[in-house]
Length: 138
Image 1 (cartoon, one colour):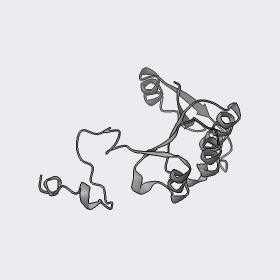
Image 2 (cartoon, one colour):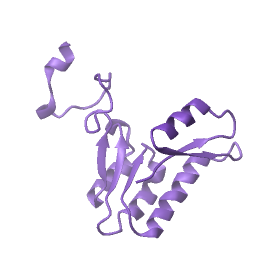
Image 3 (tube, helix red, strand yellow):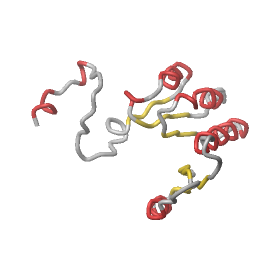
Image 4 (cartoon, one colour):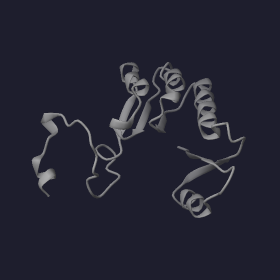
């Protein structure tokens, strides 16, 4: 497994953050480019395309951005490959969430990953079977 974290380093480089990423096992990918180029988006798209071309390996993308949908869809074409999206469900682009029909797995940071020790003040639709009034009363 290789965790990549793409950062735009065209201006200020947050070295403490880069060091923290390295300390927890991520590989920071520091990018630069012209101001009118979304260097992080472009690098992620190219990486997703390279993974699709390679033809094997599971992929977990942390993003809400629908611009990645065609690249994620290409990954889903490989039989046996697991492809997941991690983020906040209510912020995920419908272009991405619609790919669940093709096998994309959605992982909510709060509900599935349990990345937080307290409930976040999120505004979202709650399925009635998951509704717990005690969460509101605490």
